[in-house]
Length: 309
Image (cartoon, rainbow, N blue to C red; front, side, top):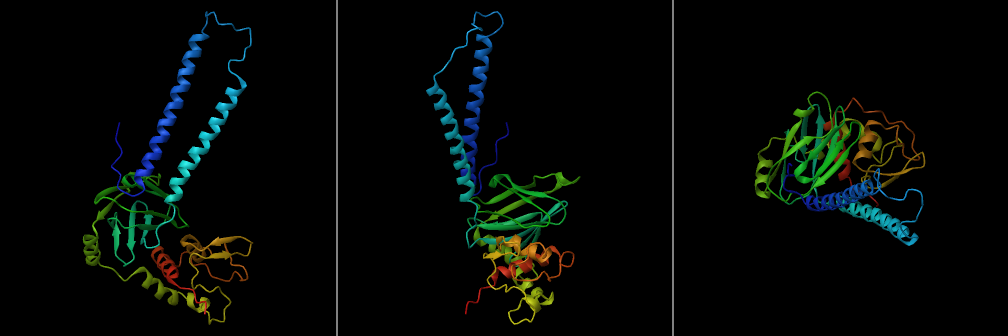
């Protein structure tokens, strides 16, 4: 039996505990059922003296109620146990370092906030929360780091997120866990965890073309976004200041949260979620902006502060 890699993230230990408890419980149920099958097979085998004509109640009604209640309680316990783990690690800390990851047959590309880029690897600092904003350029991929006990699908046309806090320095395997074509088995990478000082030195030495936020700020004007979304514009378009994280009422009556996925979809598929009170006049930028440009715009929009004055 191949042992799992040593835990290397904050969430890994609680995941291992949850997995162990469920495996032990499942093993107990399998053993119980197998034992009963063997006992009944021997007791009622062909030629045995068991009475097959008289129907008798083997256990009392109270016992039947008790084991039914115990089964229901067990199901609710495991629902709470698993949900508590995932909810506890659902939201990233507000000060998490942001990295944009693009999946493409058959490679991983990472872009840091400073603009530094990597291919096939991702360098992160030890003990600091890192949140990944992930997009796919072609098919469904799955970002899987066994040592972190984390796996997240990367779906074309939407932004998915995943966060982690490394607890050990070193290099950890990165796989694609979703079959994505003939080169699927070669879509490998590594997560390199460094101490803070080493990471800062590594990042400073990496060439970059400016931060994503800076690139998004420039593109916001160059792509014509400011001409409509500026509060002083004559065009009736939503004010994007402080939009990130706020609830947004839509024309169809729904209310959605303006997270990274919503902002990207609003750029690439503006007719899908039209804001209430506005006409669907925004052009579709799908095919006009590449993944890096969309990531830059989203990063810029997340920094805009609401002006309530």
